[in-house]
Image 1 (cartoon, rainbow, N blue to C red):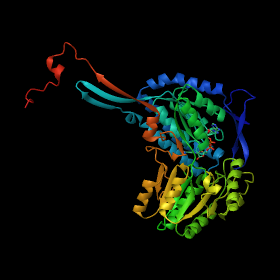
Image 2 (tube, rainbow, N blue to C red):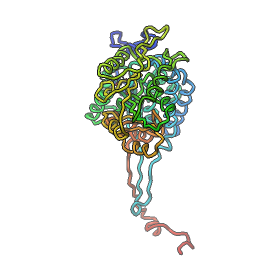
Image 3 (cartoon, helix red, strand yellow):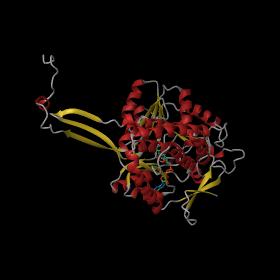
Image 4 (tube, rainbow, N blue to C red):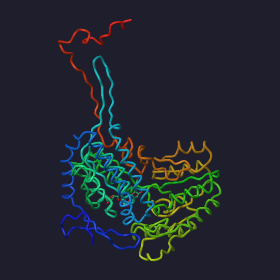
Length: 496
Ligand code: NAD
């Protein structure tokens, strides 16, 4: 059995890694203990002074080389994602491409780190502000984007002059192993980027470590809250992005075909294991035509192993997660919802033990039902019928999550009202998955983000640096000629 993150201790606790398409175990991850984490943080702390002192030009050259290597190995990264997460290769390639965009953003760090300078804020006094790196930044990431979510964090942190310790999800450890090699080949000095594998024990040890200056977390809401509270109590800077329940509000004037296409892609892409997946479709007025259009498209999707080029949708990440998602369908039916498309019956030839669940469409869902209340994180679209746009906005705003929300309409005034009054961090207008591009910042509101800073973009630069404001007065040398002592010497002839 392939062992990842081995500490050499044969008796160490391990977690299995599966190929979700076959159900077979492919590796085991050794759980790092507090002493393992301490070693990683100490190594990163020792690497910090030299990296911080490395010129912006030299740091940026490493970033550019890393970008080239990621690009060259993009298919290798995608294949590792598919092997352990299960998403189809096209989705995995898309994730790698979005991650590389953040590396490209970080390549522009010299421009982003330019400070501010004001001359003569008072007579003979200048003011300036600069951003300095923090030290060791820790990143803790979820299973669903094994390449992209870590890339939201470490390119920006490292380009700012920090060293970085990544604790990836124990369910998808291999892409990060390749990333370590790519950084090394790009010329990053040792221990500027360090990996610790493991689970909750490693996370708590990282968050509690006095040598960690900032913690960037992405995962489920209960763990995000736990990490935020723990880091906050320790006085450590923290951003903790949590779970989601993303709504798409569809108005009667929306274009039926393109809206149905967008909802199917947003609900079933990556088997719904996306924090920006649409989970609730809130239809204003008659929902039947849209329901029929989505159902027809859902039934036509091909479910299969992520490596099958014909497959639109792969398996879920583990058997337990598949069972949990399927359980929401039983509960929904018991609570009075109508199961229009039942993915539980899906058959994938040759993959009897894979963790497959086909697309599911549930109608007449109400806010009290567990399939609506909870983050399902699977290929389940719930249709909620409402009477007005204000009722739809009220529903979105009453939800404890606030990651993304989309509206589908041709009415600019309605879209403006939605954009202005909806209480979420990311809004799509006729765009179902409004993930901000790398030079904007990603983050939700309410239970979807604890802390002030969103990730990547300028918010990421600010999170990974500390601001220093400098006020300067140079004493006038006693030997200076009189005009320099009192102000500017005007060139002759300019006095008029
Ligand atoms: P998770 O919360 O179970 O795990 C996330 C990380 O926390 C992992 O590295 C894991 O090892 C660690 N962890 C798990 N339990 C822990 C505990 N009790 N104490 C300390 N650490 C613990 O999340 P997941 O199942 O890997 O990922 C799916 C979740 O992540 C979903 O809720 C999804 O919405 C969320 N997510 C959010 C965003 C976002 O940007 N808001 C992005 C991607 C995923």
